[in-house]
Every structure is written in structure tokens, then in C-alpha cells.
Image (cartoon, rainbow, N blue to C red):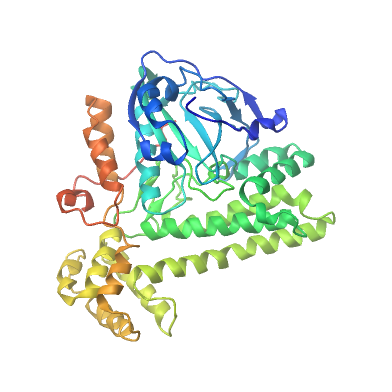
Length: 490
């Protein structure tokens, strides 16, 4: 038996999900199998690698699995939809990994479900490969994220704006419970089910909250804390989610759903890549505010169980929402100070130093990732200043800032080589550059060539290491190579 399932979500009331089996495909072929993750999950990696095409396409049922589609609602670009649910995803079941943690295994693109809303329930090859690349890159960057276990081509087409090859993605998550899951029951006025879901979430993700005086308020605070931490980490690597709808915000604090996501090249807080984000709601710099907005929607859903006194419930919820931005700022301060090698002790002038750098990067249209990577070199030797200046429109624009920064660094006793090494551990050399991702996807879709996909995954598995043989993967796009729009792919 390849898996040992313990399906706790399937034991919840029937309204929480709809049982549904994957729809078989014509000619499944295993594109990539994440053997290291399979072993982490305690699975029979050898057997899954041999027979993965059948298992990961949904053609062969896994013993002990209880396939289901989860019900949820959500605010999509600010507009509430009371019934969404897994329209092209099927939760196969839950396993307990080698660390004793419960993990979901889900197939995306395995056929229609009762929540498909006239959709075919299928996935095209491009979005499957994108999610594989970016989710594993996020993991390698040390950011909480869902994981990629496998990608399978189906041997049959899907029909979007053009005919595309189909595929199925196998995703692993701490759980797939979302803010929108709570909203589904809140919209129906089902207080008992809100409480059942909250108890389930506490048991699964926040067991330390059991027995506290106000566990549901503590749950709201705990989810806000994890989301504040997550978004600060996103900003640290220039990640733009693209669709921060409440149905794409996990209660566990993992990054989920990588449809039109992208990584920022030139620093600009207004950067948007998602083709469906026409008004910039989910721009790079807006993500903290949207995180708070989403937490407010969770607070609304939890109101009936926060306190028997409605006024007290509203007061407590508002206070929790108000705390979000302080939480985010604390996490962001930790992230940006580490990126600049400033250490833990804040001195007068540090905030101005940080602000002045970001203003200069914006004005100079500097590459976000490479600038911070070159700063790690500059922390060790001023000989790196020329390479740093080459990233700017005006090469000497950072010279006054560098002098102020080095004066600040001189006020602690950390050796330059030690500081530089620490900075390289938080400032990646490699991110999933949009033009490189698109290059890999196009080769796979148009020519059936997966070599660029494989190479990109391998490079991104070591984002903080210098990899001279793959220097091209670290470079920003040349004129004409820029990717200005990404697509959801549903």
C-alpha cells in the first residue's frame, strides 16, 4: 500500500464536502515526481515512481483514499460569492508524515465536481507546471507554502482560448481550509457548523489553543499572526500572489494557489502581473492591506462564536483586525533588517536608511532581487560597489546611501564576512524569473520539451547558493523579454 490515510475532514458533516471520484484520463504520463517530498510524507516512493502515472492522474484509486471536493465561499476581487468550492480539485485524503504532521494530498485537474459551475474540472499543462515550479521554489526559499508531489500529463486536450495539452497536479498542504470555508457557513447562518469547523482547525493546526478562555478569538489572532508573517516573507523575495481572494487564503498560513503569481523584477510597489487584476487590487505593495482585509472577513464569519454578547464579539473582532498591521510591520522589520545586515538592535536612523534605499531602487528602476544580493557582496567589500551600481539607471545613485549604510554597519562588532554570509542566506540569487518560467512552459506546451522545466526546478532548489553554471537564471529580463501579464489558467 503506497499510502496510509487518516481522513479527518471526511468525518465532518456532509455539508462540508461532496464525495466525488476523479475522472479517468486517456494516456497519463508522469512528468515529474517529487521523491524527496514523498519520502518526507512516509510514502512508498519506489512504488509511486513506478506507477505514478496511474495514481497521480486519478486513473488508479489509492487504497484508503476518500476522494471529496471541499465546499467554500469567498470574496473574489472584493465581491462575495456564497458558493465556490473545489471546482477542479479533489482531496484524495490525509496522511501523517514522518514528523507526525497531518498533510492533505489533492489532485488538481482530475475532473468535474459538484462545484465546477459548468467547468470541465480539468487543468492545462502550463498552469500545472507553473504551480510545480513556484510552489517548490517557495519551499526552497523557506516560505510557508503548499508543495508539489507530482505532475502528470493526461494525453487529452483541454479547451480554453485555444486547445492545450491537459495535466493533473498533485498538491500537498497542511490543509486546504480557507477563510472562505468559514464564510460558506457564515453566509448560510450555520453557527453550529462554524463552531465545528473552528474546533477542527484548532485540533489540526492550533492545538495549543484548546482550553484557553476564548479559543475562537485566539484562533482569529493566530491566523492573523501567520498571515502577517507570510506576507512579510512574500515581500522579502518580491512575490506577488495575484489573486488574494479569501478563498485563496489558508487558515494554516501557507501560500496557496499559484495561478497568475509572479516575482517582481524592477522594484515598484505598484507592480501587477495578473491579467485579471485590472485595477491593481493585489499589487505588490497592497498585499499587507489585503491581508488585513481578508482577516476582517474571517472575523466577520467568526462573530457568532466569539462571544455570546454581540457587542463584545464585534469589539473583540475589531481589535484583532486592528492588530494585524502591527503584526505585519514587526515581521517586515525583521525581514528587511536581515536583508540589509542590520542585526536585531534598532538604532536611530535605521528606518530612514531602509526608506531611502527603497526610494532609490524605485527611482532607479533597479532589479529588486539582484540589488539585495549585490548588497551582501558590498557588505564584505567595497569592490562590489561597481556591480551594484550597474543595476541602476545612474550608476552612482547609491553612493551616498552606501556611505551611510557602511557607517551604520560599523556600529556593531559583526565581522564583514560573517554579515555578508548571513545576508546571502536571506537574499536569494535565484527566484522564478517570469521570463524563465514562461520559456520553460512554452517549450513544454509547444514542443513537448521538458528540459527547461527540469533545469529550472533544479536551479531553484538552491536559491541562496551561487551557481555560476546557471548565471543566466539569475539575470533580469533583457529588453523584449519582459513578461508584463500572467494568467490564471483555469
